[in-house]
Image 1 (cartoon, rainbow, N blue to C red):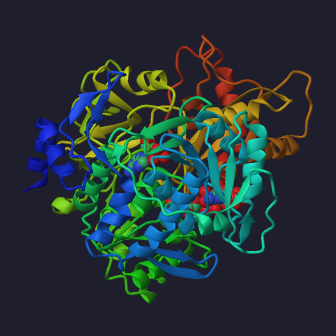
Image 2: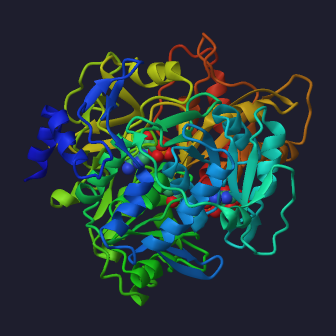
Image 3: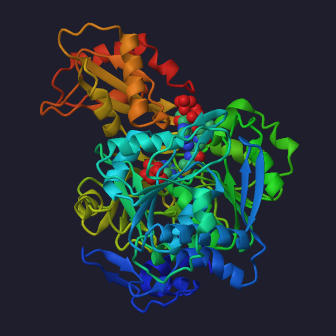
Length: 635
Ligand code: COA
Ligand code: AMP
């Protein structure tokens, strides 16, 4: 069947379409109710079905006779480790850890936080929770203790699973002390902190709540997977919103399993036993869906890579991993390719490796510029597929569904709607716009299985943020346009979320930290263009009256504050002092205007501005401080 026909079926008869896909999973209880409504009057998939994600990702393959196949290849250039972990070994590790969690009193419906570097124990922890119905929330290691504390207070974990340390190129990141600091700050206190000691000589400070991972599993009973309702949350994943408080996206179990299994075959074009590599981090949605659950559900071998595209040890690492482990499909962010291209513009390092095993290179996480796409195509000599999705969707919404046969690649476009997603472009008033006209990218309800079901303890924010802007549609927060062939071009966020090196960050959160500096009266933080990271944050501050301060020192202090409150990953490095901020007469700061002036893009000064003179003043400050120059530097 051709893509278009398949897609149309999914939109015309979603229940028939997804029932058929769900039947490809080994349910404990096959669902009869395919699509229904929950207590919040929102859609739910397979409500009366029961299954277990850990069983589907591990035990099922062993029962089918594939216990000796590699489930995970852990490749860590930062520790010089390569480890092949079979499905049999994975089961042993996961079942023991799940037993250990049960021994500590954790039961179905409890929550845990997993704050781990890219090591196999991070995957074991996720699957161990899934095995016994414990809802996990993985927090990206680049977030600082304060961010971790916010998440601890929101999801109230009974246990936190962490490691002695992470490694950023050569630098040791002290995970355990970060957890201790977060617990000191949080109102909620977990009962236990389980620490995996990487035995790299890093000192682990001890607290009464500590439990050693190795001792726990050495005494643990083996846990069997339990039957879980399809709608039971598998995980909470926090993501940046437009306020200072992150949103806890809830993912169900049955819908997610159905969608991921479907996507492995039809979006990524991989068959069982293929080697698949998503070079992301388990702390992001890409890691959840395509390092852990998707490939393992599909009985692929997943690569767990603890390194960077460059400097571990150089810009050839990606090509070595592809060639050495026989990777068929790879997924990374455009920023990683730009980093490699900067170090090896002619792609000479690629020629040192036989990458002929690679069939498709997928890119996502941020807008992919045409130059990056073309360079990758030219150097790797495989189709390069940009595709678009979000933490909320959990799996691709726009793509080139190569499993249905490769469609034409249009550089600059993230592809066409994936089965199940009725993507439309609306104007401000909620009317569909003509072809090639920019508007808001929305999805007509119901969303397909696997997408968010609500926000943790905040169904009001779920409704107001996503469902009420345009009745009957899911509001993505992105702008874009659709061409005459149905290809969508994403132009960027229409809110105050920015995307720095493929990492989604909230400027509102950064503003809260900047504004808390004693010298600052008010501030604006927004994203400006960066050649390497796509965007990077810039802060403008107005000082309290009478404050005289050294601007360089002020910048250092504010940068340090953001680093310790949010984390290094924010890449917040630049602060400019201005006399006033441009606002509308009703007092709203004109952030988009500030960004456009910095990026030297065309801008229109709104007629509602309160003080037109400020525009020229800020423009001059940008010029004096050479914004255009430093925005293009990696640092
Ligand atoms: N734990 C602790 N710190 C982390 C971290 C982690 N897991 N990940 C990043 N950081 C830190 C970095 O060490 C860096 O700290 P520094 O400011 O002290 O140097 C800071 O956060 C910014 O990191 P990063 O965004 O990775 O920038 P970089 O300049 O070190 O590297 C790239 C640039 C392009 C190589 C890198 O951003 C990259 O690989 N990007 C791809 C990201 C990706 O795959 N995203 C996928 C999401 S789908
Ligand atoms: P996250 O929730 O962290 O995955 O970030 C999702 C956001 O990243 C989207 O809302 C987009 O703004 C951006 N994004 C992801 N993939 C793409 C893409 N292929 N093209 C353009 N923007 C993208």
